[in-house]
Length: 191
Image (cartoon, rainbow, N blue to C red; front, side):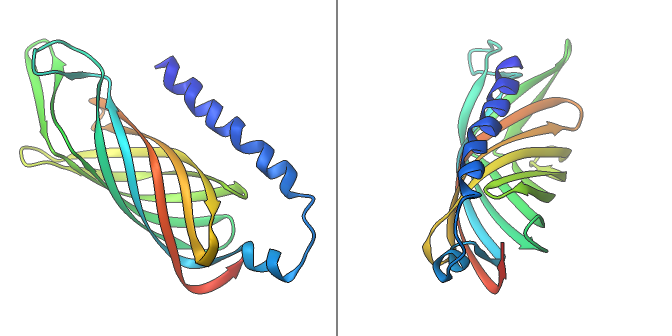
């Protein structure tokens, strides 16, 4: 678990220099366009999920890493606040040892959560909120939290690197890291 805490701290520290240099920009028409954003955003996540408590097919407890895909919708209130519907599809079946006598089977779960997004500085977003993990045998409530470092591209496209944590029904944890590519549309706001 210490590895993931260090990884989270490093991702935050890496994003700070971009903000420091950004304060020296001059105000011009091109800067205004570059720092404006749209009220609605749709994005796709390509990532990997780590489930530390998972068991492999050979019944050995090991860290299981598998691909995941996501589809997100974000509504932006202002330059610092937004809300998003985050949907993630885990592309793997796995088993979690719940206690000494029981195991939990998860087959290609779908996670859907509503998170509040806070951008304390440009390019850095912190998010958290509740959700549900849908799976054919049993659905779990989850708490999701994470951080994303965002980079705007021309024509209101954007790319981000994201790290998120999910606590699933107070039973087990999952970490997802990946790349998000998105497109803004609707009303234009200034950053």
